[in-house]
Length: 321
Ligand code: ATP
Image 1 (tube, rainbow, N blue to C red):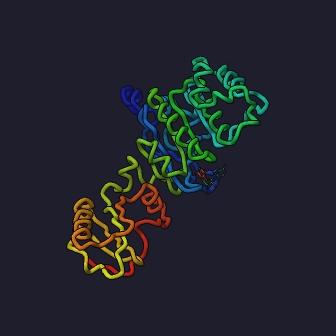
Image 2: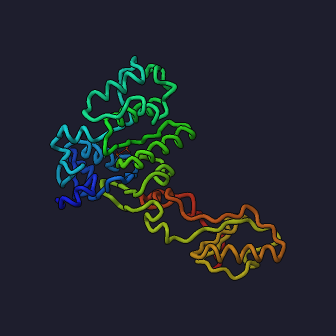
Image 3: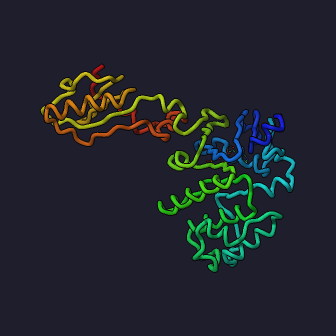
């Protein structure tokens, strides 16, 4: 599939991957690569084919066609060597509920020839205070952190994380993100699936968007779907005695009025904002709720997957070009 040098550089390599369930083509010719040390995030609506793709890479499902290499090995062959070097955190992990956190991490560690010290793993997922608590007494978020600990105890080179922060409170999510980032500092590769766009934005070096069994966009979160080239949106409200026509000349593609709020779409947000604020100060105009925004990853994702975004798509009542 590739040269030895590429294999050393790549954690995952997928070419024209296909999987059908009867008449349903769940994965229809998917190709991508994940470099070692990268956080790669697979996004997509329900039923897009993410779980099928991930489970083929994990060796839990067979493929109908195409090629796949994980750490240089074919996951369909189910080698022990591969299982030893891959950590998996599923959405729901069944563990023996009457064992304590320490007992469970120790037990899972025994499956691996290479393993990290139990205490170190428990500290990494910040369950130190719960080390002697039985799994059934942990909260939902703490259980997810235990799942992560169980995936890490074998010191894997590649970690699959399936919606790792579902059910976390905002503080716990931030902690989990720090933990995931720290895995990359240790040289690990992370393959993430999530429905949270802020999570993908925060963690991923690259994201791929899957829809109806195919990858429809791939790139760095800030560049996906030409996001970095899209116009910025400047919004503010004007006092009632002023109208859109009173504004100065602004470099923009479009300026519109949505209710009482002016919306300016511009490729030159710095110049446009400077003209607007200078005009407002010169004329003593009180601009309310002034903001400058680029389209978010969520805006781009919704656009790519055919859903209606909330930003940058509201119908305009008046357009002045
Ligand atoms: P979600 O975000 O809801 O988890 P997903 O992107 O992971 O969705 P998959 O679980 O891979 O999607 O499913 C892709 C398609 O394959 C769906 O149409 C699903 O109904 C179908 N499918 C998945 N597993 C099976 C199966 N074991 N038998 C038959 N069809 C299946």
